Length: 148
Image 1 (tube, rainbow, N blue to C red):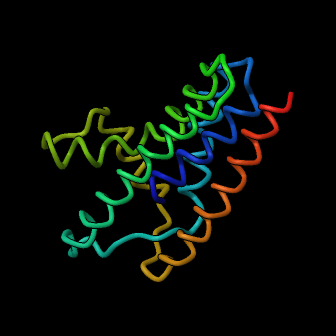
Image 2 (spheres, rainbow, N blue to C red):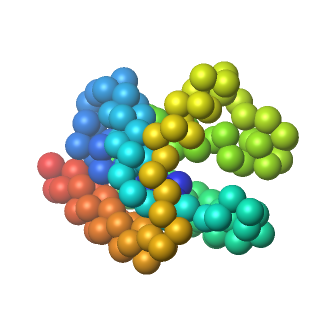
């Protein structure tokens, strides 16, 4: 699953659980697990060049989504940031392995995270469509938060 999609799911959760940052963080982690359990795009492990190309773009887009969400969120933004952090947390292994040669997590966390992946190479457009729907849901949740 693209990290941007996890960030956007976290934005929906954070906007909904505005007064409970601990719950928002836990639900963010749970959303990550649920999303990874659903079939989603994954690159052929032998095609590391394509993975890096997509990961760079997704990382920049994900950081932009974090910035936009925090900017558009209503103070206090603690639950919003907590949910996004929880939703993206498990994917820290990928950039850490790429840049530092190791995951920041214990081996059992990486084994669990690897075991729940349901990657399908043909689901790239499905992944993009899911991102578009999550962006709309996040925008709606943030707009509803502003109206309150």
